[in-house]
Length: 439
Image (cartoon, rainbow, N blue to C red; front, side, top):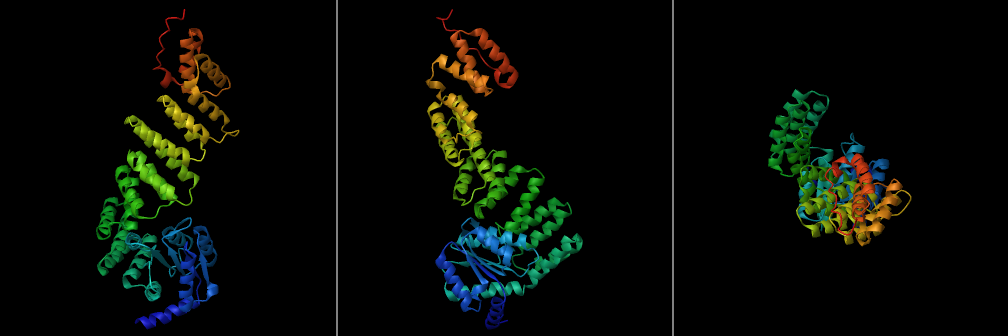
């Protein structure tokens, strides 16, 4: 089929289908709209939006057959938008997804994301190059190659659990293409479903030898390692995915969990920066990032780097948006290490309402305890304790202050209760030496 024949078919396609353009730039959206109209599209059939959620609404309602999306869009990425389109309309095999990229690394991602991204266009582009890319991508989807058709045939057999037949089909597909990473992936999927994980792993690795960041092959390896509880290997894979592919909250949560589990604490700075760049941050991803950064900060303290811990905790304080549990944990850590000024600075981060009032009062006492005399410490700590606002560190300050004040009987009473409440902490408690001037 020559290019003129392809253009005619493409014009027919444009005239009878809904189209979607997603780009933060209104100028880019207008330019793409004009090009599509000039090529035969009806302006009424083109939706042009800037935000991920708007695009998703159009996909759900109008099922566009051509989606043109910039790599980075408000609220997400074109890459994730295409994946969501496939989940919403799994039977819509003719929908074409084209990623608009601005650099070579983004185009590499597009190549590695087989089946999710059908083609890509690199900015800046000319109208002629844009037309050529659009025509070739859509026609390739409408009239798939023998290689793609063979993979689809194998997938049908695989999903019908006819694994041996599917394997034969995928083996044919492997021989058809110079770079058959996708065929290796599905051959590996068959093996995975057959519980032959070692063989599946070999297939995924072969796909990655051809394209070292092939998305589906990396996901395949990740799932195997996770299932076999090979967390170190799983982390290496998901870290690589996060390095090359656009960040999304779910993937960031996975990588942070494994980062902490495998004790790769130094990587948390990278994930924090990815988090900062997310345009929309769910409460779940916020929780995981703050928890990961907190562990990272504690690690730095163990390493003797208090300045690094202070910097990390400051970032959490800014990012956690008044989440009491993290603020409280950081205040306690600071006070345990006699870093009172930084503990006091965190107090302004609290949102003092009915739900967090008791935590704020506790943290205020802990942070400001270094500026109190013995009697003040006892008075305020007793007030917290008697109002059932009990915490081991505040109770330790109370008991120590009572001993120093010479109120040994009372100190022993509270020490006995503390041993009951927090035995693992107070079993190691050492009474302070009695001051010489106290009878």
